[in-house]
Length: 126
Image (cartoon, helix red, strand yellow):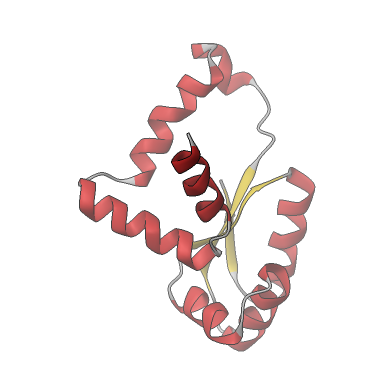
């Protein structure tokens, strides 16, 4: 169990970019897609089967779909939201579509979406 706890601790300390890179590497290594894993895990986690989609979603993932015309403004907002350094924020914006924040509540997700759209980005909530 100590090894599993260490893995949990290590994964918890990853930045958004590192987590995205890890997901990509695991997808390549195992020949799977993270989207398929989420689709499979979603109904299992709900436990209610058909009743799960009727429940209101409480956690959202903010996905930067594209930077739009004002890339510099979007990079500034991404830095403010995530606390990433300039290079990491620039890489994230240029690599769109990328998840920006995961497991955030509806209010925070809407706030982040509004900030980024004001800067000129296209944002999706999943």
